[in-house]
Amino acid sequence: KQEVTQIPAALSVPEGENLVLNCSFTDSAIYNLQWFRQDPGKGLTSLLLIQSSQREQTSGRLNASLDKSSGRSTLYIAASQPGDSATYLCAVMDSSYKLIFGSGTRLLVRP
Amino acid sequence: GAVVSQHPSWVICKSGTSVKIECRSLDFQATTMFWYRQFPKQSLMLMATSNEGSKATYEQGVEKDKFLINHASLTLSTLTVTSAHPEDSSFYICSASQLALGETQYFGPGTRLLVL
Image (cartoon, rainbow over all chains, first blue to last red; front, side):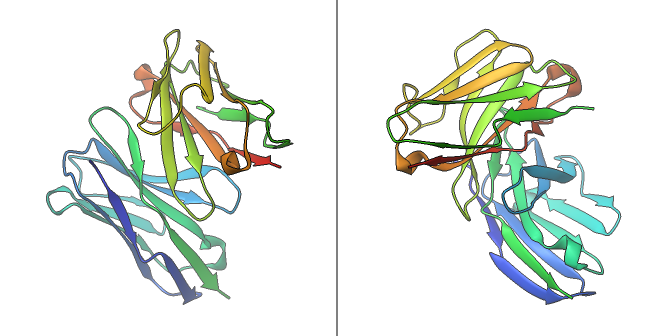
């Protein structure tokens, strides 16, 4: 059974710092991996999607990497801003197109 | 493109009543819709997968008689929480996908349910 773990569970950093969020999964037979952002009480915003054959994806200040063989992904946020404060969720899609989510990292960027 | 809406955005009901939540794909035909539940400070857990015109497939531990899912058209799926209890209070999120658009799931904004 696929399990997705995210570390750390919570993170508080001063504005401007570069930071890394970690995601690990137990079964390397994934279709893709996706990073989402969730603001309190809101739905999900897709940030980056990495296909299983890819190593990384970039969008603006965000960079996500994927090492399928070791079951790991990282989300790198450069020059963090208070507006980046949210919960970041990692999810892997299995071969039946189901998404399995991690428990998230709650990020607070202090002004 | 690929917008998914949910209605209502929040609902409060008395214990024992039933509540229906709608999930609509606004600009595409969704061959598959997914229903998730999220408890406070926890992650999303898949409840069931529904394909248009067929019965939903429920995940292990999800009571199909309590959480009725109907996917009657390519743009609408409904989740009915029957005989709701306080422990059913949660954030319910749907997503939709279309084979022609690949495997990507497009998420709705969620519905917060509070059962008193």
